[in-house]
Image (cartoon, rainbow, N blue to C red):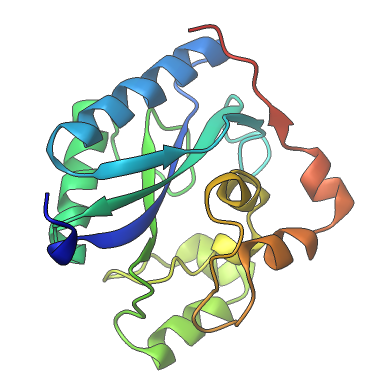
Length: 194
């Protein structure tokens, strides 16, 4: 992979495949290996964290991590590859925010704003009730919910603490520190057994 064509990306990975957190951890690790085969290079993986399902009662706890990496794929081809890997590991998109074997979210693609700043801001300002009912019909970058999700920001601080949100003008660290202590305390470090 030539550095000239490479784009820096941030990915959030999560699984709540079963009540056994080790199963979810193992699945995330296998998906990272799959990503490294042809999709991403020069990866930096955060610590792994245990996170309650959202909304509460939607399933078992998640194992979450964030990856900083490089890719030569354009953003849409990368998204297709991420969906293919999710499906390979058993992901079925039946219910928004439901239990899932594997979830891979593209958080950032080389600091791009897609499709445009107006559309992204609409999603940034959308009330939670509307988010629960509405699904974007196109790729939105940066991910429109990352600034309010402790399960994204806590691991993201491990690999990209100084990443600057291109619209909000805040770093990962600043966004994490703006969350409530209660929210932050729901995320626990996962001690894995490899």
